[in-house]
Length: 524
Ligand code: HEM
Image 1 (cartoon, rainbow, N blue to C red):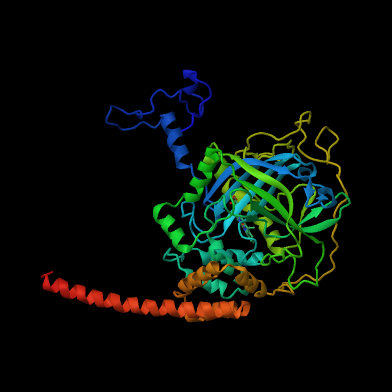
Image 2: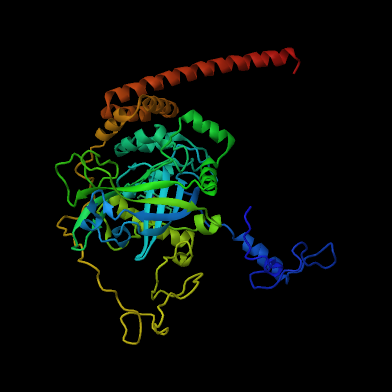
């Protein structure tokens, strides 16, 4: 346990209530006689119990279980061999050695705040950079792609992954019902059911922005960007299903513990930030759409270029204040970084700040973990729990509007040329032209090592065995389209698992008969 009080002065350690009154008795409520009844004017008790009644906030609708740490990002001043200013004017990248403080939250996705950290599930990898130009959030996952490409499907997808709304039982048939009608998920399913679906812990995993973003330079010219975090000295480690099950039998919090204890020991995990760059445009020569988050950008054509490294060197002082109340969002970018037209990214960008106004509160950006470390001056006023007025020194406090000639805030000047994409298209509700749902799933299957393919096939055989046959057939159809060996192996494994289940049913019913006979003989 660490000492958290300031100084050694005994007076500093006196318990008070939130009004600053010293608490003289924290063991006994005020009663009429020592057997009660309790009086209701006892402010200390009322304050304490009613604060306790409210001490939980809604948990995140996804990514509820998480762990976090503070650290810094250090720029290399270059992107690969080129100066970074060729591509972006974002200040945090410009000078070699420039450090920007960060807070990172890792998470599992589907289940609640106390679920197991050894679940087969993507892992969240969200980084808040407190830059001199305000905050930049890079809200990523460990895996480099996603299940779907249209944000309209996200709530259905998450519902299907969660327990049944009637029984509250987890049932993978629901998940595979949805996935077997969403062919674009085949690539992600291939990663998720391989060992890459259970990273050994949060330190030894990669991170990825998944969606396509843009970088914009001083002339307003843009390129398409994918972000990737590569673990440095701690490396990458994934688990086989039986290893994860063993951990789950002993603890549900091994990843939080691993991160916390490594940082306390002074073993500070490090990741290198790499980007893949593609010229801005539709790239008809590619067999996939560069804005499609179900696709990898082949590294031989779009190499990883290093831009800096991140070190996590400090544990949170308070889990709730920092890890629970931190709020990341894909809309939180700084000058020189931009969105692409990736539909999923744009849907996400609405969702994050919307949920945070509900989950944390209207003024969530005033909390220390979320507030930028540079100057903030807005005309936003009021709302529940407003903590202070964020006004500029010298600003006329009577003026909370803009424009004004009476001493209010002024617009900033533009720091470089604007990036102004041009659109000439019909408004439609349509799938993209190059869905190519299976090819990369096949490439990923073939790129796995033998033991990873064996695990993938075994895991899929198990999980599909509890699904209806129409779901099994559709999934195996997708795997076969990806790679015929992949489909054949999953089919064979499924048949093996189903046959073994029949044997077990048979054996266990014989055993039950024998047990009944034994009980009869024993006179029960
Ligand atoms: C958390 C929505 C796709 C990574 C969340 C939260 C929402 C959300 C509502 C809870 C935020 C909070 O309470 O603070 C969506 C929607 C998506 C989507 C609507 C698609 C349309 C993705 C993708 C990734 C991702 C593709 C990975 C690149 C994360 C992470 C968190 C998160 C890491 C947890 C952030 C934290 O630690 O606080 N998402 N998400 N999400 N999402 Fe997404």
